[in-house]
Every structure is written in C-alpha cells, then in structure tokens.
Length: 285
Image (cartoon, rainbow, N blue to C red; front, side, top):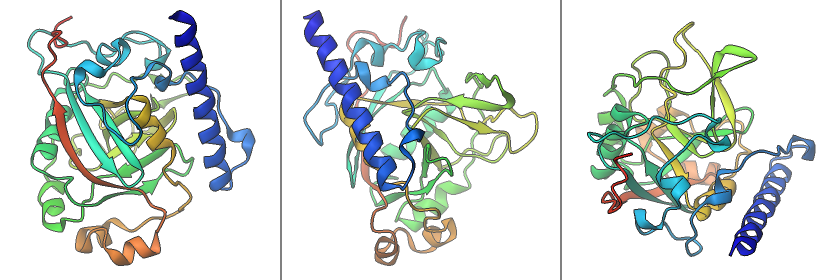
C-alpha cells in the first residue's frame, strides 16, 4: 500500500542517516558534516541481509530504467537504444557485505564493456581493496587485485573515453558532479581509463587534472542498486588518510602485511555477473 511504501522509505532514510552519523563518529568527523540529500536507496529493491539481488527482475523501476529525477541531477541519463547491449546485474561480495551493480552500457558503452570483460575474466576473484579514500571522505578507489599478474596485465590496457554527460559544477566549471552510488573509472587525462575505479560514497565533484578536458574519465557506467548495497557501502571505513601504495599492491597484492597494517580497510572478495537477460526488454525505451 502507499502508506506502507512511505513508511519503508522513511525507515530507509532514518537508517541511512544513522549509518552516516556512526561513520562520521568513527572517522572523527563533526556531526555538522552530515548532509541531507536525495538518497538513491529510498526507492531501492529489497533483498536479504548480506545478499546480492538475484536477477534484473528484482530491480525497481527507478533502478532498471533511470529517468530524469533528483537521483540523477534532474537529468535524463543516456537512454538505451535498440542496439544497446543489455542492462547487466553484477554481484560483488566484499568484506563488509554484498554490492549489487546495475551496469548501463548506454551510459558509457566502452567503459561498461571493459568493466564487464574484467568481471568475466575473473579479475576480481582475489582480494581487491578500496585502497584510497578521497580527502573529503566522499569516494573510494579500487581496482588493484591480489593477483599481481592480472593487475599488471590490465593496468596499462587503456581504453578510449566515452562522451561525458555528467553536469558541470555551477560554482566551478572545471569540476564535474557525480552522485552517490555511481561507479566510474579513475584517470589522469584523456583516454587514460584502465582498471582503477571510483565509487562515490556521497554526492561529490572531481576536477580536471588536465585543463579544459572536462574530467573525461569520470563517466559513470554503473550504479549501486538494492538497499543492501547502500548498507554495505555506508559501512566502509574511511578513516585511513593513506592506504597501501599502488606500487606495493602491484608488487604484492593485498597481502597479510597490508591487511594487518590496515585492518579496517574494506575489500572486494569476488565479482560475477548475476543476470544480463531482462525479459521486459530493458534495452529498448
């Protein structure tokens, strides 16, 4: 019923604020830093605690067919066409719980395909830490796995950029805004995307490292779906100023030494494709 749905959303919002409050306390941040914002998990699909969504059919309409809304800056994300590859659901099991990702090829065709190629090649089958947290605690970086040979194999296989569709920051045109739950590539200039990724913990902005390039690597190709995914993400520890260095991870992976030095650092245990067959023709609008 409508009343029950409203109660569920209000419960989700309260849970999210409680998680944020505990995370700020854990990271020694003042409570005034809490932000009130439109939360994508407010209309997220439900699943059991610690579980990924089992199929695309379990996504809500807002998750399967992203529309113009506050969740997406009041913009319409690039819609799929008849020729678009299918929407794909990926499950990542982490040290903190489950993450379900809806990979949207229409958002970033090249980036989405590259990420799915990595998943299907078992790139994330070994421990992959969230080894960097932004200084504002609003994003984490991951992608260097404990299979050092596989990390080295993909780290220098760069791919071309996809068209940038994220909005500019109105107060700083050199920045692009990204939303809580979006997943994109890390980069350092045009056509530098490879196998390092950024997960936005909160709404945030990224600046050009190369002037006037409009942050070309920061094109979302996926977003978190399912309320359980946001519960997991909000439990990630963000208190380390500096995690293990990329050079250390490239040489030794996220080994016992790194885990002992950073015992609270979250990591991906493995990722796999759950479903890429949407029976409701999600790839056609």
